[in-house]
Length: 256
Length: 202
Image (cartoon, rainbow over all chains, first blue to last red; front, side, top):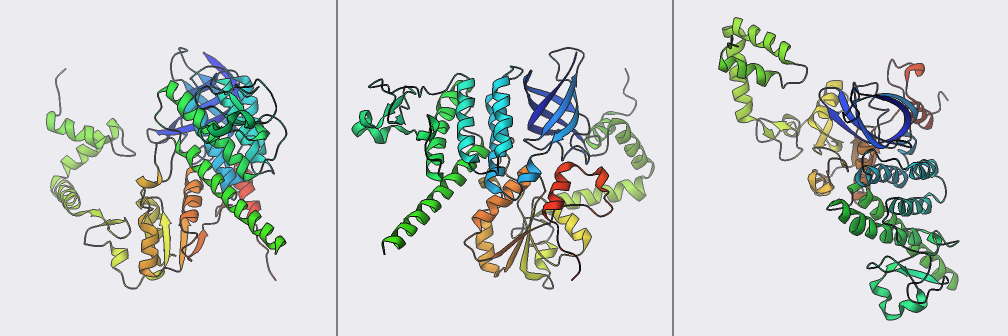
């Protein structure tokens, strides 16, 4: 058995003295593990950082074996984001969520394309909203995406502002009424054009985080979201609060 | 098949083969060498192992290995108490000490944040750090963590934790290693080196 494909490193565990068991997310084989001789060594360790894009050849006698990867670097991503803490946290979160959520050896080419696209944007203006959309696409790809097409109460497509944590369906601001505080937020940029500020991104991650943890995580029998995802959400929520305070300060200055 | 070495020796070989750099064959060679040089090597080694196993513990201040109440670095009054170097593990502390250029004190985290291994901030010696900085009047904290996603994620987390403490934070530089040839460097290192370039002369 042998195949060659490109892939994204989503996990790398040291195995033995200088080898590593590496999980790649590939377009045609999905999440696929393999042993990399020398993977923990000086030459390959920088290449096998989470989020790195590599060219891989997998070889094994039988298809069900772990097999051996031969890895060549294509695009290092982490080193380019070391000076940008939120973007680095997002890269770590993408890798951790893929390792956490994807079934082994099940191809998801559309999600692969979306993943490469969001990693290409990390660090550029507006990457936070792109990351939130990527989480939504991960949920949809695995069959756990909320239905944001129309209001569950009125059937209308206007003014969608909430999502029901129970049904996973959108609810308009008018229909939510006094139940609004029991519903999850739905920022407009997830259903169409809308502001993509830190507050909106934090709200989007609150919503996707709920479905990742309580729908997808429950189905996978995982107890909690990966630490990298939790830290990213905290980091972006904090920057959202700082930005809101700054906005309020500027508005107060203008009024004065 | 008969056991040529005997149960006790087999057990020793099996334990030795778990050490880094040793496989079953090299462990067997090492054990044979020990047995041949029993008085000059095996007995002193056994005594040294027993002594270290009985006395070594984590330094309560910095997390380094210690045989006394404090480790040698924390107990040394000549070390610069205003600079603290945060490292992932004792191996990194030893590497910095080997270089012999840092004369401050250390703080050993005991690992790095890792989503894969389920290591969170509560599993590391992070909570004690702000109190230690305040108690010892530390002016600068050097984050000497590995240039990996996990190492840098931990560094950023620590920077957040210490942001209100008033301490000066710095991190190790990244780039071309001494004796390194650009042709042999990975793209990430070259990118980091270009990003961290500095003016020459003048």
